Length: 192
Image (tube, rainbow, N blue to C red; front, side, top):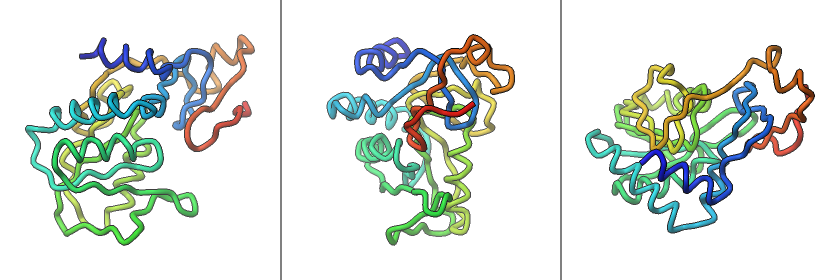
């Protein structure tokens, strides 16, 4: 399935090559823009079905996705898993569960993300719902770049060993290759 997912991303121009500042602040020579997949509802539905299948051995009640990047894949996964779907969103710089959404104490939750590198957004999502005392049953994603270092039960469609650099040790910066920050937090060129 790895090649199939990578091929879908390539076909949708969702794999970018260059010099990127990831949401984590790390630099990389490759960027996964899963939003490019969302242009094609049939592909997005297929990926949601595949993620739901990956979660089929896990007992859970609700899917929660961080806005904005994972809302669509979270919805498609929830639809195919026949589970409730919620999302958290930023307000005043913090992820929050808004719009009247609530959880029951102990509710079993799966967090769905598009791409995970450092799991920072997963942590922010968990922080946003912690007052409800949910059980985090798993984390699902299209692309997992963590090398298994997060401590979360991650179910992914594609695992990639990332090439990432701390900004102060980035060979791409030293080569003078322009740095771009294409994530949802900033679409403009990043400052080094």
